[in-house]
Image 1 (cartoon, rainbow, N blue to C red):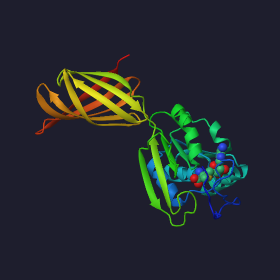
Image 2: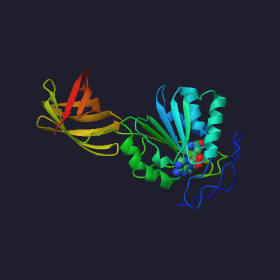
Image 3: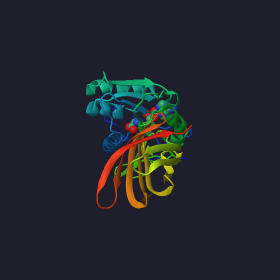
Image 4: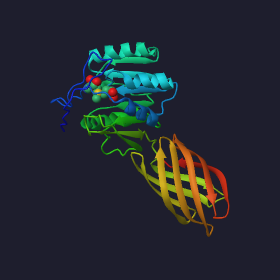
Length: 285
Ligand SMILES: C[S@@+](CC[C@H](N)C(=O)[O-])C[C@H]1O[C@@H](n2cnc3c(N)ncnc32)[C@H](O)[C@@H]1O
């Protein structure tokens, strides 16, 4: 895919100027994310003090620097262009966050993402697609990925913000989109819960593609209706309706999926009142 960028952007702090979008060889050029976009990216990614953030193709370092300045996140920026890495280091020093930030000359396809909590990127769509197996394979459940303008193809996003930027002359002109993905836990399989006080044995059969779940549920001998299923990192939520011991209930199961176990609670409503009981489920081998 080839996109054309007609104007040169001017970056005040930079001795390196932005390039056309994109090179004929498919390499993502240096174009900065405007400040308003960086703000939305960090709003969606929610870095916390102590979190590790990586910007893949870090340009002048602005995302890593802002995350350190505003949230105390430890950041690594990798870029293929040594001049941009030098510029980022200088910008980090100027911003007083050189202890929290690191900038390296590195091919982003080589960057080790294990243990990273937040990945940010502003890359070409085909580069994003190539990164999907690495992102899914290396990041832990709950890690956040935020991308400016381009999505991750078959992996549906969890959230998206669109903002109007009249001055934007690259990619989708005059607007930016910011996408969020939360790396999902593995919830697939057959799960059993014993709830003697509510329906006896529950069975949940879960099929999963990325974070999208398809769930069947039974309470004892009753087939239940799963009205909603959501997986966000390790957090699972199931809204289930049906008959338990001959009486109709609405339930909301909420728990965390870790190491073949789910632990949380279930809120049970009979239409007049509700109660909350613990929910524990184990995955069947
Ligand atoms: C569109 S800019 C984004 C800069 C910054 N992340 C931002 O949002 O403001 C993309 C950056 O990726 C870098 N880049 C392109 N291909 C790369 C590769 N294979 N490895 C590392 N960096 C790369 C470019 O030098 C450029 O600085």
